[in-house]
Amino acid sequence: MPRVVLLGLAVLDHRIWVDTWPPVSGRTPATAYVEDLGGGAAVAAATVARLGGTAIFAGPRGGDPAGVRVAAALESYGVDTRFMSVAAAGKTAVSSIVIVPGGERFICAYPGEALHDDPAWAPIAALEGAGAVLVDSRFPRAGQALAAAARPAGVPVVMDFSDVDTAETRALARAATHVVADEEMARQAGGAGALLERLRADGVWGAVTLGARGVVHDGGRVPAFDVAARDTTGAGDVFHGAFTLSLGEGCDPEAALRFASAAAALRCETGGVPDRTAVDRLLAGGRAARDG
Image 1 (cartoon, one colour):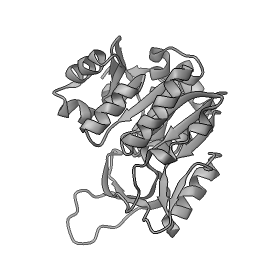
Image 2 (tube, one colour; image 1 turned 30 degrees about the horizontal axis):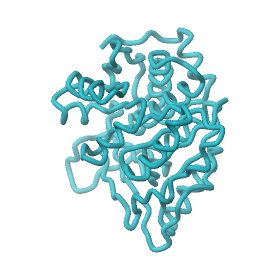
Image 3 (cartoon, helix red, strand yellow; image 1 turned 30 degrees about the vertical axis):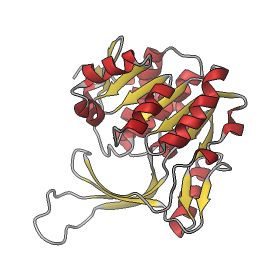
């Protein structure tokens, strides 16, 4: 299995499930709670490891208890955390997430403090023997440094394009080989078609995830798998990790999109990071994809 280097955000998530939404009073009972790993590149790294790849994660965390728990969560999945940067006086990113009936989630995200976007902590040394790289939008300067070192070696560089559309994140998109954006980024760009056209003009392969409506890309559309969603939190992050791993295994982008769609569907259905057996079973025909 390939070695995948992932750079970006790590978050400590606090997820609760409720049966009633929206709230009807000042206090709403929760039916379940879990503390879990969050953050685009961090969840993608856990996904790579669960699917059988070697995952190396780089990103800053605070020197606080939340940061210690985030690192421990990554390591519990088998992710290599040697390249994490610890800001001793910093605060780790934390999210509180409410999951409502039907699996939709509402996120209150605290971005952390003193988690600087510094190219100096980009893990260039980790690229030796790497089959693929993933960078997310949160630390575009560090991501560009990693992409600039990876591309001359012929290593595919996937960008998770979400959260913000700025001059720096656009520069990171141009530095990548493959960009997978979310629906919000497409909306900001004037629609999925407009965003894909912009990426084509920059010489980058592009795709846009649309939740239950699947994913559109330069060659068409891959439908979503038909599952009953329990928790959609992190489904996009699982998608990015699975897509990057599949590219690192030598698959073409469309096959990688289908593999990633199956992994993301299982995340929605179970709330966990799927393993390879479960993804392969779904791909083999366990349930039909939905044309949406």
